[in-house]
Length: 184
Image (cartoon, helix red, strand yellow):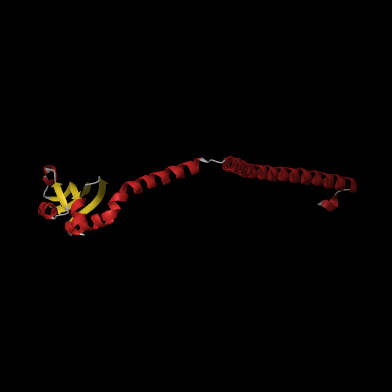
């Protein structure tokens, strides 16, 4: 059909074709540009926020004190205080030794889930929390602790014996450190 047109009409059609091609190309390039800008903006914002955070951390480190360093110092101080608190106990025996001894006394039917120790010069107080499979096992455990010369004052609240099976218990014990020193 293009062969049926005159030269002037052919030039008109060719000019119209080129004009449409230019419009479609510019719209496509504009669309690609908009997509590129939209996809670059979030990464630019993310990079700038990370840059600001790094600059802030750099200033804190350069300034001498950082919040993380202060928290770490507090944790180290707490651990040191706890260690110094347990130091006199460490001369005679260690808390893991006491726990292992209690665990042996507990047997297979009693489970110790929490162990807390506090001490003075003469005695150490221990509070243990756990679960016993049945009432008889718990009573046997308490009687064993009462007969053990290391421990005194093994007390079990009667409320711990309310159920028949899977009893939760809390025992308070006193460890006589002078007896431990005499046994050694």
